[in-house]
Amino acid sequence: DVQMTQSPSTLSASVGDRVTITCRASQTITYWLAWYQQKPGKAPKLLISKASILQSGVPSRFSGSGSGTEFTLTISSLQSDDSAIYYCQQYNTYFPTFGQGTKVEIK
Amino acid sequence: EVQLVESGGGLVNPGGSLRLSCAASGFTFSSYTMNWVRQAPGKGLEWVSSSSVSPSYTYYTNSVVGRFTISRDSAKNSLYLQMSNLRDEDTAIYYCARDLGGANRYFDLWGQGTLVTVSS
View: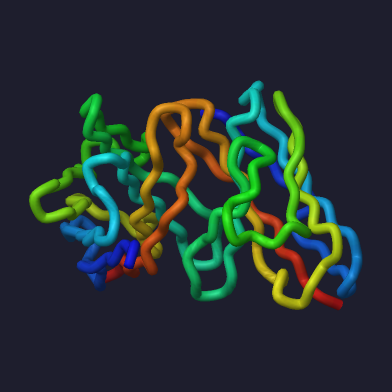
């Protein structure tokens, strides 16, 4: 299985800050990577597919980049509504795997 | 409305069985690969199983092979997960999720989840 490792596990930032989450794959996954946002008690929500394609309706402050084994999710100007856990997911193989999650807290 | 609605969760003894259902509406069910993804209490997401239509295949994560069976009924626009020989570590919220299949195996639509608790 492809192992996905996110860092940091938790981050605390202020409204307006630029925030970056990193996701590393144990082997190359080209650009077959998605990012999700999950708020407490809710199902995950797809933010980005194919490493950098923003889904319809997702605010433009979210962006994704990377290829191969290293990927980033960036929130350009953090908003209070962005408080959530963020997961990366590889889909390079028939067995999708997720990162362990990054909790974003608002100071 | 495009949605997935899970049902069938509950409390079950270790070694017991349970069948989860997922009712799809608002989209062409047969055009999508359907999945079960679970989340143990306070933990991250874990893909469990997939079912595609064309080509027809089913896949499972290693820990449920031989115990869980995924199936779908296109006439009823429904996905199922038959779970047997349940273990404590199967306790989780089980989400139904769709993907486009092929190279697009990301999950663009999720249900609200159904909680399975395995405990004596």
